[in-house]
Length: 395
Image (cartoon, rainbow, N blue to C red; front, side, top):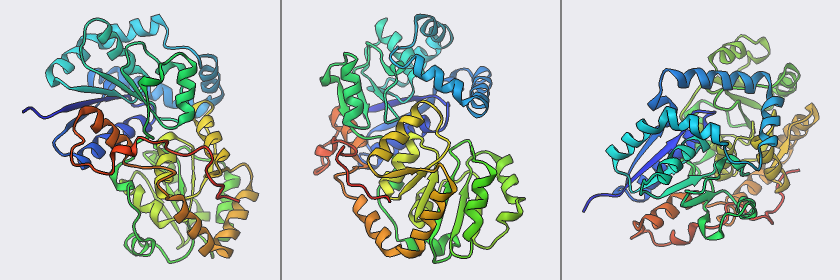
């Protein structure tokens, strides 16, 4: 009998959408190696000349004009992609996308970004007979995710489900799975052993992440971060922004044995386990990975739109705090030195399966594919990713 095939379409606007696709593919493979998965960034794969230019323009807009991004998000919040946009996508990608699907013959297509979801939806409207799942990769649901031809929506929480039902999506077409994370985030490793492996000291550690593009905060926060380097070690993980990495490495304030500066790395799971506090932008994937590791978060420079919504959600649940002043850093650094054991105990409580089941999304997809045989104990994993009544664990 032919093995089941899952085709995951993403797009490279940020790193979270494609990261979610790969995380889900790896999770499915971990739970059932018999299922074949393929991840494709639609624009990069089908139009490699134009796609990098579009992504570069988007990145510059996010960096230089975040308020414009937020305004567009809010004004279009309740609207699906308009007919002109869908027609343009159809003209650019229709034949190529159809050929890829015909060649790979998937049993299921999962889209982790609205643009490929719109392209596949149009293909389905014209006769494509393959189920289409849309995986929403944030803790909010913009109208651009919605298409009539979607067979099922996979969402992060019951709150997102309520947003979709409020827009007329039948409840039967929505499954609360949580946002998937790579299997490397499914379990927690000993902090002490990882610190030894990573060349870190056995003292409070703060992980500072700039997102996949390495976006960073202002000079005053560097001053606040480096004020207590004798008691706190800092790990900067700046993604693919090589210029920023070099800038930080030439910053005299960071020339200290308790500072480690990294660019892109595949060991974020280890860094989260080794650290006691995460300072980050509130991207959907990063928030979920931190949730899986139980690490408390401080959010800075949320991009207006979905990141603001992510920020609001985690702060409301007491799983994060907004980094809006140097006093927040000072407070947390004092706590890390004064209440170290207590904070670690709180972190262990945050790892309760009632909060988040990292296998849940992969298990749900397998069950829908009819390939969940032998996965006892995971059939009920399609539960709410974070209960709305979550206990407050931050100061």
